[in-house]
Amino acid sequence: LPNNSIYMDILYAIATGNNKISEIAALINKDARNIPVFTSRLEQLGLISKIIPVSGKSKTKNTKYLIDDFFFNFWFQFKYPNNTAIEEEDFDYLRQLLHDNLDSYMGKIFETIVIQLILKLNANGLLVFKADPKKIGNWWNTKGIAIELDCIALDRFKIPNKGLFVEVKWNRKTNYIQEIKKLITKIEDTDFINISDKWLGVVARGFASPQSKGAIQIMDLVNAAMKLKKIEFLRYNDL
Image (cartoon, rainbow, N blue to C red; front, side, top):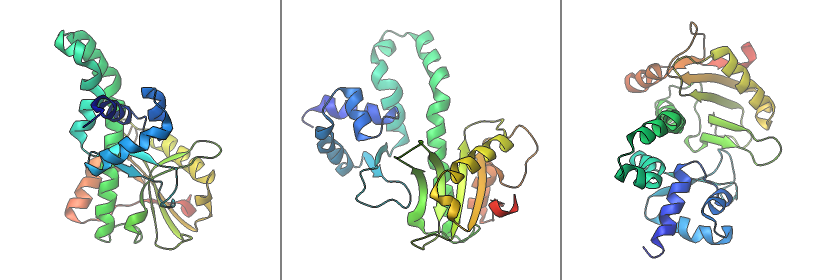
């Protein structure tokens, strides 16, 4: 590829969470107006995907980019910017680097896996309602207070009647009550509060206290998807 270093820098930016055009441009010190030429080529090569918030318009500028392959994503976050330390065998530095950043990295991978499992459950009719597969994924806003929802699923109607909202935590001792309260606050600060039938859940590696309805360990979600079993979520109206 011509301008190979720019493509590499863009992939590094995306891997490290700078996945909007403005963020990529700022990190690699390039004019934001020139970035789409490179991201379009990376999309054509199948290296990255452009995503929009669930229920967003297809032509919205509110987009993000993701590296599709988990190995490439890891390589560009940890290997690409640290070649010198690797060549010099600075193992103390590399060990500390992984210690400080691996959980954050795995959190985003974990989120992607949960979305894939929710898609599989929905395809087999095992969610609390039949969602539109095109309306399952991340959601984020661009106006007012920044709000991100890890995974949502909406029904097929233009103005949805049913919605599932899931918080995803890469943590073995997740505080379920705390996380479900945060999730409720996020929903109440968006138009999703107007959905009549809302369901909630927290998916985590583990929980600090005995599980309640809506507290879902990742292995239970995996088993449900593999063995075609339903998962219990918490109904907002039952709170």
